Length: 421
Image 1 (cartoon, rainbow, N blue to C red):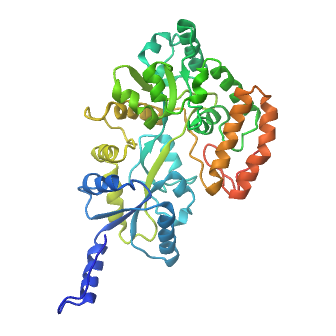
Image 2 (image 1 turned 180 degrees about the horizontal axis):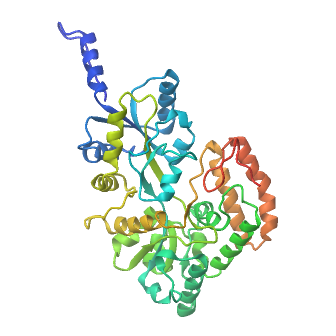
Image 3 (image 1 turned 120 degrees about the horizontal axis):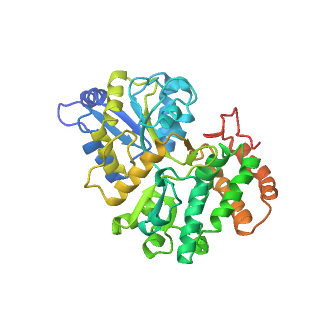
């Protein structure tokens, strides 16, 4: 809340300032790194937080958000009541900085609730909203599903068999993969393939299990449209028929569902030997130990988890609910389709999230480029898998050492930089 004032007649600036401070003190300051665009922030204030009491929603970039938070924690008192941030932001904080939130609320995903404990026994934040990458397919592909396969619980072997069946029936490889220059292929390796086959991302980079994962990627590529090296937004290939089955971010598939909602289906990513790897963009809400009114802050968090509030949040931010909720019919078709797939994926019994890389700073681009290099050398150029991984391994370790980034899920936690074992 911003207050502007100046001396006018007998009214003193001191009195006005005192009044402003008193008014602000009644609000719960919601300090967030999410919903920063003007339209989203306004929708948060007017729709999402309607009925939550006096809440001052203030979104900020990560730098200013952390600076003010750290200043209040160091001072031992402050005005921030509720924190809104990504999982990676919370995981970088000390457990002593956050209030235990057991009993305040939780998501429908046991996986997310475990993540929110940050390795401890108590909820350090409460899952708030999520986005992700999913699978999509033309309904023309459905008759070619392997016998007995459940589209909502596919394995990688079944995905490969399905794509091979389509290829045999049509004479064309119609699995679409975002391997183009602007495609998000690195997120597939980091959040889907590696967690599904190695139960890690960094520690397991050059492991025997990683060799198996890349062998499986070669099998998938054999039934992938070779033009995928030019694909970046798979909605285009779904619409023009170059792809009947595809993987991409929900936002990059939306055009297909919104333009021809009756022609496509959305479904979870496949599972491997170590689970159904997927990359959630998970945002949560927490309370710093310096919050001035704990009860009011907890009430705001409880409000955010109400089904109707979760729907309002979806409308405001395009982030999906983390609680069980029926999506209304008036949402755009892409939101309905993707929301259902994301919920099934994150709520699956074998869910194994490969979180967004955290703590890499200006090394993020170099980190992702190493996974892309592995794909290009192993899958596109056909080089020996173990030799490629062993060659890249010391460079990956250098990125981790130089950034100082500790491990993130599904890798086991580390003291200091995450080791490439």
